[in-house]
Figure 1 (cartoon, rainbow, N blue to C red):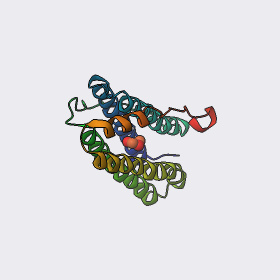
Figure 2 (figure 1 turned 135 degrees about the vertical axis):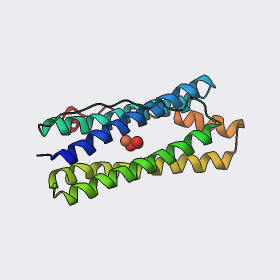
Figure 3 (figure 1 turned 120 degrees about the vertical axis):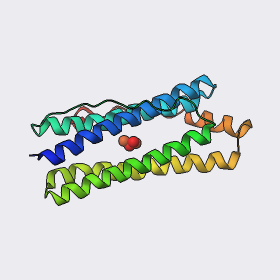
Figure 4 (figure 1 turned 90 degrees about the vertical axis):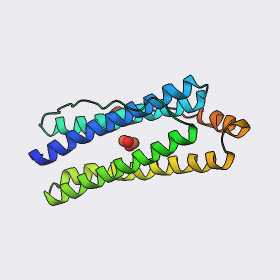
Length: 172
Ligand code: OFO
């Protein structure tokens, strides 16, 4: 059972996750346009993962017998200064998402909603991984500096990231 406050907050999180997807799809498009196909691939995988996060919450609200309500998605930025700029913006955004997930956990505890608290723990762990990945890539980009062979090598490395859709059971 979800109360109205919790349902509204979870619906808000769906919007944030879809915005994340939109932001990374925009970064993927930009990367491809400037010839960084590996970065384009990495952000495209990230786009799929964010849609997966949104659908996890969508399915949870639906399963609990409440209504999913979709809201307008803000326009993401379309121009970026560099690969490092994209990843610094990604990390900044993920910190905002982490804070939002933690606020949801606080609300679940306040509302004594144990089921939602347990459901949200997956997202708490996921955010540690998301920020960790971004920090790693930022460190590498800072090490190689702008352009040149180093950037090309990181681009090659990011090309190998593969999106693995969730198994049917873990989707619900
Ligand atoms: Fe959904 O983790 Fe990023 O935003």
